[in-house]
Amino acid sequence: MPLFHETTFMKHIFSNFAGFGLFGVLVLACLCFPPKAGAESRSLSRDGAIQSAFSNNREISIAALEIKRALSKLKWSGRLDNPELEIEATSDEPGNDEDEGSFTVGFTQNFPLTAKLKHERNLRHYQVILAEAEIAERRRELSGKVDAAIVELMTTRAKIEVSNQLVALNKKMVDFLKTQVEQGVVSSLDVMQATLSGRTLEQQSKLLVAEAKQNRLALNKIIGLDPETDLVINSSFSLPGSKPGFDVALQTVLQQRPDYVLSLAKIDETQAAITLEEAKRWEDVSLKLFVEQDDAVDEPEGFDGNTFAGVGISIPLPLRNRNQERIEQARINHEAASKSVDAARFEIRAECEEAFHQRTDAWRLAREASGEILGLAEKNLEEFRKAYQQGQASLIQVQRAQEQVLELKTGSLELVAEYHRANAAVRLATGSYPGLSVRSGKNPK
Image (cartoon, rainbow, N blue to C red; front, side, top):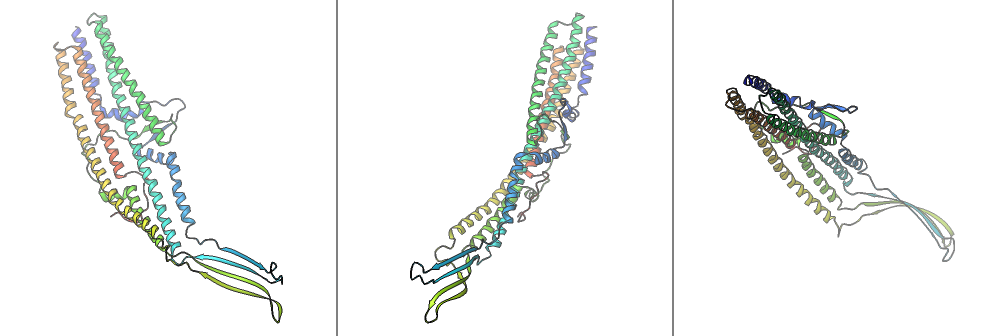
């Protein structure tokens, strides 16, 4: 009679356990935290969370002012210096005091001999592109942080679902054992052992809940939302059915990576700086227009006045200083920028290779953990169940087999999470995020 009751219970437990689907739980993982009263609830996709971070992140907003600063410099560049007004008056009062003197009014304007004003505007134009590329690169880095934070939050919430499933199974076993103790079938020590096991599982679940809260707070901070905002992430946490490939061409990646576009724009900017510094070999020419009133005593006419108008020009001669130092520095900067393009290209290619291989390896391990290994554990549980029905195994052995299967499911979940971490690394390496487009003075080579 006791064996019949225990066998019926084990069939009930096993049927519930067999119906437990990992990926079905993962889909519902984001719903495991009901929002607090009065707390805002937001439902976002991964790209939506990234776009929200772009709009709300305070550091990005501050950094974006660099673009406005560069545009302001472009707006006011390429202009002539202000003209100079010269006023001069002379008198012979300290001398002969014959009312002789002169009064002169003149205007002086500097004009460049070269096209340096045009070259200055050209330089400012490339500096605007540099500022845009720098902001785009900061957005790429921010997108990677958002992606990684989302993966950690979804992983922890999925672990909570698995932990809750284990707690529920243990509770059913404790309730059953209590009934058996009342009938004198099993010892109260078995109930105590199962209860202690349940308390341990509940403690682990509470730790996961606290971890999920920290993950949510961290994600809200990155996105720029209120700390109490409850997030529901609309993103699949399942494993792809087919092995991910290397389906992104390097040329496409280079065009998507703001740091590579930044290195290309740096070449254009340094070349424009060389052109500007070379144009500064000749300093500005000063052109002067003046009118002079001259009063003097001439013999035999006597006191008489006269008015003069004239033009003057001043041309600096580049005999000693031909701006050699600044030209040389500009050429060194250009050489460094050219080398940085090759370095960036090599670095990006290496990052992509590493990320793609890591994702493939993570997919393979997660696939194996979700397949044969887990299948063996479930078969082992079935064998223990049959042995228990025949009186050849204890209830604790069956319980341990159940826990082992759930532990493997938790391990499988962690490997699935590792795949999604690797997939986030691929997105970071390839720059496959929304809102990262930036102008380039040159096409990637």
